[in-house]
Length: 380
Image (cartoon, rainbow, N blue to C red; front, top):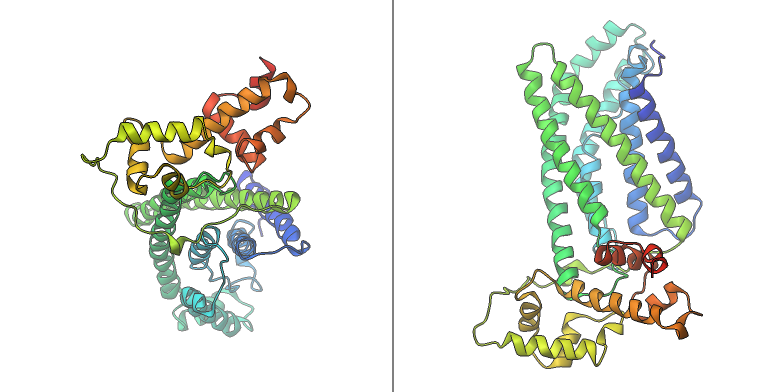
């Protein structure tokens, strides 16, 4: 049995340890919700998958008691990520029994794994264990599980990415509420996961093309390192969530209507609409409404919603959310420069200017100015 602590094993163990801390935070905190529960399940599955590779790297697979230990959960993480994506893009998300249908492949593979483990349990010799396992077509089912994991990964990745893209399109084009999460972290995670899927497909091809299987070995290591880093990051997010004890308001995705075309309407006078928007923001200061939506703006200035949206985009790459935040940032600058407001905190001023999340204010301020609020105002 190989007990050497290599760099690879250390990375995997660190990910598992961080995952355990995240799970402890989830277990002992009362304010659990669907998205955090799903996130905890994802972390648990990632930890089990990490333990699965440690069975081999630590040589435990050669021990009769650990050989064929039932961990056939390779098809579990994909639907869990999709359901988590649904939960963070849906208001009042509720789980249902129908969602268990996503895990039918996992249930089937796990049943087979338990049958093999029980059937080989009495055998103390590894060779005899292997012979018994083959009576239950262990290697053939394991190959099928690997293929199913890759195919389901592609399908669920597409569904998840599509849902995130739809949510972000709705958010940037019609909502100014900075309390809504932009879910950039989840989108970036999906992008990285998509690249990983490509590498896994490549590794499968490499395994068949390279007699030594060296290419497959490298990609397998990269996969588990990425998985460990993902475990670490998700556990960090759940720790931060419970330490701050807050949550972003979430959109009911099913209520989003298909985006209307914003092609230039020759009958619409976009200059007039833009002037009306400027008046609404500069004179009426509608941007101070932290929950201002595109629909409310269109009603206030008396133009159709799709024309208002097109007018905002006309001649620039700015969307509704960016436009409103631009006015809010300028208002923060103006108020903070006023000596009469020195008794107020920067966060308090930001909230008065339409922001309703401190974290989003700092992020948006840096996006618009290139500086953090502290560095910007200290130089003035």
